[in-house]
Amino acid sequence: MSKPTINFASFTLDCPNQEELADFYTALLGWNKHRFDEEWLAVISPDKHICLLFQEIEDFIPPVWPNEKGKQQQMAHLDFASTPNEKEAVKSHALACGATFASVQYSEDYTIFIDPVGHPFCISFF
Image (cartoon, rainbow, N blue to C red; front, side, top):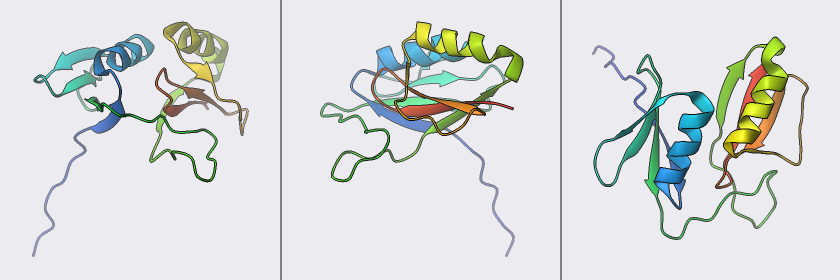
């Protein structure tokens, strides 16, 4: 039996307002926003290989970072990358777009941010 082909399609983020979170990631990444239908809104990389989907959840509870026992846990987080010589510019840009610094940072090689609805994401500087 041959192995079937399975390709990456998208990563879905739950959120209270999909337009607002899609606008944040559009500004942060410079990618294109695309609405598939009333339920699905996406931000797609210029090469069309990466698609972030935004699913609006009425009773959305943001995750707590870092994790705390008994609190809403993150299920996953996004990792992005830039170059070390752009580190300060990238940090300033992320904050200007609406991100905040996470209260706990683990390394000088990457910065942990929180998006406007509470999802943690990292930007690595290797």
